[in-house]
Image (cartoon, rainbow, N blue to C red):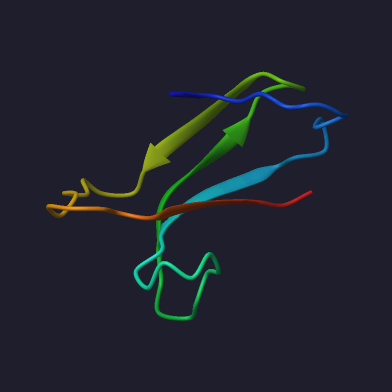
Length: 70
């Protein structure tokens, strides 16, 4: 579980996805697939992500992106 924090009204967040940013450019590209999806429970609350399958982190740095829809 990830703890979310921030300011403002975040209650409109609905679908949340986690991507591996394979080229570390900070943008979800066509070849990058979501490895987890979930929901955001409340304003400044918990972000719960369910892995679609086990994901083994490679040795070294791994860049991840969290996206969300309102």
